Length: 260
Image (cartoon, rainbow, N blue to C red; front, side, top):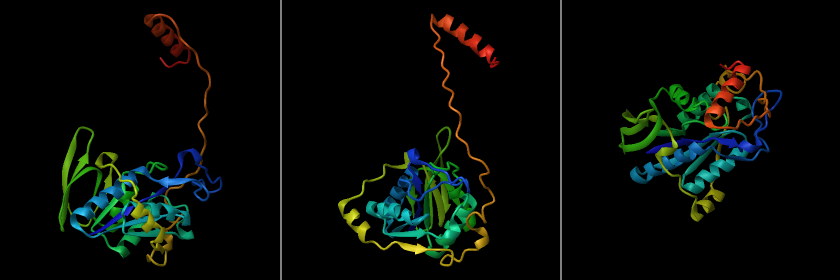
């Protein structure tokens, strides 16, 4: 069984910088980590491989430094790694990113594709489902448990607001996962040694037969027009007294600012 796990290297949340000209995240030279939800996706892929056989390929789109994230995934137990890196991919929104990933997945071939439910830098939760749509295959979001996997179908539990749904799908299928699914394993010493030696396959627009009109900023129907930091208001007022006095005083303060 061929399993592909799409991962993303995201900026360390304490070191986020914005390009003032393109209004996109600056990733070069910024400390980065694997998107936390993607670690659960890697673990899910590894567990299926251990049960059914096959291989796990980790796939990411990003600058050359994203190779670090791929090698970390190899150290966890993934078999192969593919880096989609090309100047033409720069500035992609979720639509262009999904198109690029889908083109690569077509080339690689997959029975099951795992993604984290969302990335912590964008928080859109759109790339997984959009990638499935570009591929023309089923997708199931918010997977909390994989119940059964066979050669032709998979049965999973999908997290809902109250409980969960049990869903079956034919293969190939794309699944986005939540943290309740599993506990990602730590890299082994053997895995770390393998990660240093593995050859990371690199693919650009030519290798995935991509239409340049669907790539990067040019192929992105959504673009950020303005970015600003929220203003921090330092005004504080401590309300003292009995609970009843505090409530009355709070209501009075709210009336002053026309909240009630």
